[in-house]
Length: 371
Length: 243
Ligand SMILES: Nc1ncnc2c1ncn2[C@@H]1O[C@H](COP(=O)(O)OP(=O)(O)OP(=O)(O)O)[C@@H](O)[C@H]1O
Ligand SMILES: [Mg+2]
Image (cartoon, rainbow over the protein chains, first blue to last red):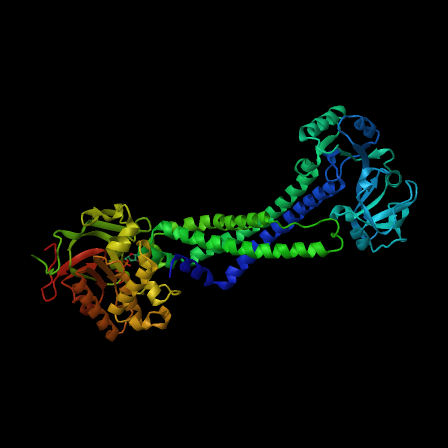
């Protein structure tokens, strides 16, 4: 028998209560894993999308939250005149409810802009020109909306023919409906407006020059921000909000977990007053008793964390397979997130054990033995 | 010599109490009302008296399980309430034996005996070995792996005695060790305690309300209403200290 045996034995003594407490913590941790995993998966797939398309700089007005505000498309011509801009193209992107899908990315792209280039036709064809009333669908979007080539899709007030299914090599692209910019401007009521300008710089342009380009754009047009593709996730307000929201929602769940563990440990200390009296009479230092209580609650946290990670990973898997989410998000469960979650769980355990441990260390041995 | 102490090595008292007072509930319950005595090394002293006279309270003060309200109480010259490390004192200088045994119910007999050893820098194997030896000495080597609930009262008290000796204390404080036992088991436990007391040259303080049990001692202290009323040696005519 060693000290650890004593810790485990105490937890094992009340299996039902111990397991209920574990459930409490694990739900909190599962929330962390799921929400943060979704947010970071979204970030990752956006980064991959930019990389696949070959976008080096994004110009947008990010003040509006998740989707950037629209601005005049005439800005494009001015930006194209700047040095180190090989290709400049405009995009109007919106999240819309399309038929049965509550949220779907619709991307109106400047006809013959470079953002069309990486799309591989899997079935059917590309639109003939900018005026054909046609869309192509990413393969996931087509799957979610159950469309094949030749079907009609309703976007806002108008109807379009699906002429092709495309593979864009990233989840974001494959989950989108793509059409020529003027068509989308008209149907969405944003005539003459876009909300992204995507820039490709010449190969091997060094990072300093790209930064200089961004600064020039922002000087010319104070209402927009020009961000290097690699920094989009870190700087954009939308991503920050998504991340903050997922953490703060998780925090609530974690607080519930803390209260659960604290309650359990307090009950444990109260009903074990007599036992703690015995330990004190047998010469156990108060420090050791405090440590015993803290170890018990830390282990509750650790076990709860491990169960929570498993639950969270399961939830992410289910979400990944859910039709409405599929194509929008690519959940990401990184090792770093797992370690973070487990550390939080152990921390929750230790913090919740502090007060009960302190209580236990204040007992007078003779009174504890009587009670 | 006013007492019989065959194993007293260190001259001078082990315990020295002077006008010791303990009140509970902010003075409403006076449990000890000015108790003065000395106990020498190696002595076997019984404390007897009616229920509620403060015997357990006195033993708790001696064992640093509670603090006196006033008066002085010394262990080998050091004030017990002011001990720098009361846990070490409880764990290594004294051993406790209780009427209700106070064994931990979720641990086996052998594990119970190991509990006091956790404050010593012993390995797991050393603890196990020592627990085995102690249980052998009290005749429980066949019960090592049993939970206390599976044991008879006499066996439980023997396990508790083995535990009290875990760290080789110089003093044993026994509060009604036979109080929950039938007469036959009581005799066995008293024989064991007397044997251990002589073998290990331990100072033994035993609380009892049974004169027959108490008379195993070298000296008997009688208490009433939180005070010492008389002291005697078995066979002596009782005499009052005030007389
Ligand atoms: N924690 C406490 N709070 C209040 N009063 C107490 C407390 N512990 C003991 N007392 C009181 O102090 C007095 C002495 O109690 P103590 O337990 O020392 O008696 P005792 O001589 O050991 O009696 P018994 O033979 O019944 O064990 C009693 O009146 C008792 O009610
Ligand atoms: Mg008593």
